[in-house]
Image 1 (cartoon, rainbow, N blue to C red):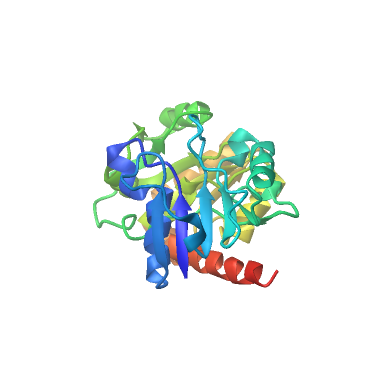
Image 2 (image 1 turned 60 degrees about the horizontal axis):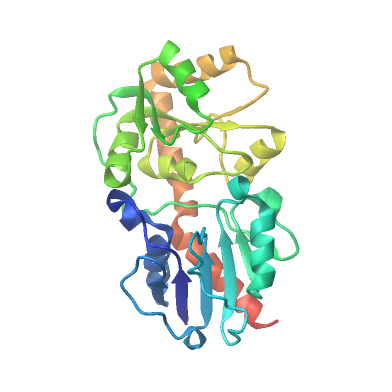
Length: 289
């Protein structure tokens, strides 16, 4: 099997090795799949698209119109991998699906799954994201972009030793999350973002915010269990309940370590290697159509 992943190269040196295209390339190679990466910023000429069995257009914003029109590419199956539908809106991907005559949308945001798509949840790269064996000296921490999370951060700083690592990337991100006893995370909209899985993979207790019951159900479908392998809050939980659950983790090392161990066990189901297996299965299914 020969696969081409089309994605713009990473714009940050520190985080480039964790770009989705490279993580999935390594994961597919572990399945003995020949996988090439091409796109804006990569040092490679435009490939012969017809020479592949599968082409994956992986979340390209295409601000300059560089993404090729694949509508006349017939031989390979073509998947459109949509990661940011919660941010950009599903209509963008629906239009691209029709324009490029794709076979399937790999949709990371479950509420947007329709007759042309399937749910492919986000994942983490266990080649680089893992427990580092460093001391967890920070009670609570936040590592990422602020966006809609400032209220959560401010609340945490009022109650605990909360470290804020804004736009800390790559290996430094992994080190930061490893240093937290609890990592705070809030999604943007109805997605289950990467940081959920990356926190599990670091062996750090995840305190994740779900917006409603439907969002909580998505977490449960992925194996997240409140008080077992994470701390999961939804909008109906009181501030007092939030404080109580966080304090229970901070005050009881045995309880915290139990959650950490269970988190690492759950993380095994959400690696890029597992998603690569799913993509191969989907390709084999689509070949029969």
